[in-house]
Length: 304
Ligand code: HSE
Image 1: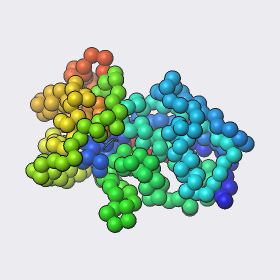
Image 2: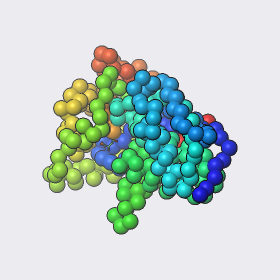
Image 3: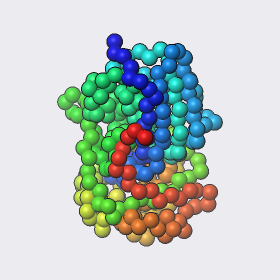
Image 4: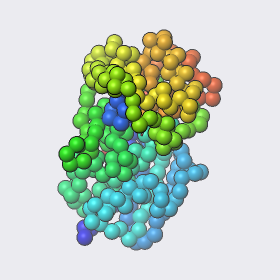
């Protein structure tokens, strides 16, 4: 059994936007809004403190997602802490399609690895990503949460491990998010998807996902075309009609807008990261929604 490093250890993890239109369950982008967490091993018991988002409703026991993720990583590292103290300072909105669950999972596995003596040698970044994606069930949020920037992720057809490859993002590109007042669970949003889709729609999305890699890398003029989706957004309309209306309104005026992850947040790309995107696009923001301009995060999970 492995021993522990002196704590406490700290990590901050960014919000993420998955799918980005055509890249369902594959493409993801890290955004400059970060949860900060701190953990240490104690002599016994479990103490969980939550500040900020979720402070009134997330569980404080072993079912807390960060704690569950820490336990999964401790198991993988063959380490058994007598007790744990965890503090979460949350700013990523929950159930809005901005990757709050993935941020919690990545934070948990990262903190556990830092707490185990020699943890980075026992569980490298590829293994950490695979573990985080196994807990989440799909890799498109956990990959950018861990690595930062734009990522192309998937599951290997032969050995079943999750992988992620970073893509580049033109520094002119920024993002504005429109966050509705009420959330939608990812489970509910996934439940609206059909088992089968027309071949023409699958083919269109494959082409647009490939184009999006090039558009993000240096052809922001192609972002509107590259963010078109036929595989998931419209099927989810019943759970987020106002979000789909906003996507259509923005796109009809030439702004590359998409449903962020499983929704209901809407993300619009700005072709110039000039800081006035929220002001320009804010006129489209429905009542009671929040509009935020966020830089693309390039750090991913990192100590603080
Ligand atoms: N690709 C996922 C979905 C993102 O759209 O359901 C949610 O985590």
